[in-house]
Length: 390
Figure 1 (cartoon, rainbow, N blue to C red):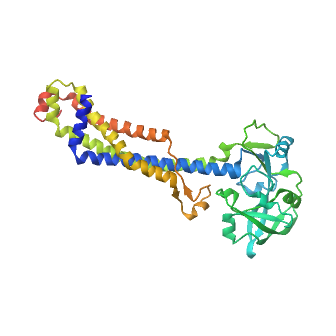
Figure 2 (figure 1 turned 45 degrees about the horizontal axis):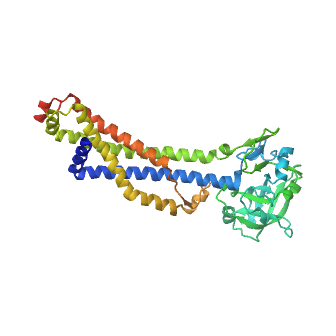
Figure 3 (figure 1 turned 90 degrees about the horizontal axis):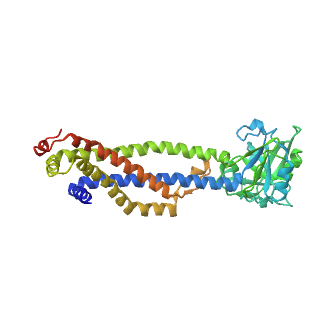
């Protein structure tokens, strides 16, 4: 207890030098926690939106289907197996049929994916009920980005061309009955949603689908011939890869910031040992063993970290609470990045994140404080009293 009081008094006596180090350390704590919390919030928001609007509880893909290879779409359809048909009948799954097509908004030509979905489905949180139109020959729904890029609004009509399973081209006029508000670009960009049975009739693909989205009620997903089950780990891997790359890039910034903080602590300790060599000799002459002298200087470095935590709490906690509750606005172009990003991100700060950050910084501070203190181990009291260091 005495050595702690002595270390604290020495820090206070150092004056401005101590508080500069404490300020740098507190900024390091706050910046790392805030940045990592932002990534955690980004991942959870994006994952939640993708699961809610697109992935559901997982998807069964027909064999050979690749959403990134348009050449596979013409053959990516098959009759729904009996096991999946039972789930569809019990409203625990919804099939989606995907066909290639071309739309002509306002006289322009644009390739598009035509996706057929049951208007009465409840698996995905998208407004498919708007497609349940009896008076419209071909009701269609587009996303907000798709609508903005092509100047579409509810009630507009556009020409749609497609090719059926026999290779015959056909065309019809589709009426926009709904504009979908979704944060998931893969549900929006270049896509036109129509009633499933209508697309089946247009393509002559009775009772066939490209994929089947199941609900989020846990059950054993058995292997089905000709179909592959894709779980959340697979469907969310793009988001995971993005967050992982962002964290890796940020690690460089954290390393630079920690290096600057540790350099300040190291220089402070070296200067302190040099200026207080007579004090060290006096303490050793009075009977303090070298181990305790080293502990004293190491403890002074650790107290820098503890005071940094206290200083970070004073301004960091209000800042973190404010950003977690109000969110951080994103630029208007964020929705076109290709990921499920909202216009406002809400950071998430977990106890594990805060504890790990504090532990890493404190461990680094302790090591850096100990390294210059080792010089005391070979010091003779008489040399120290004369103001000399070994």
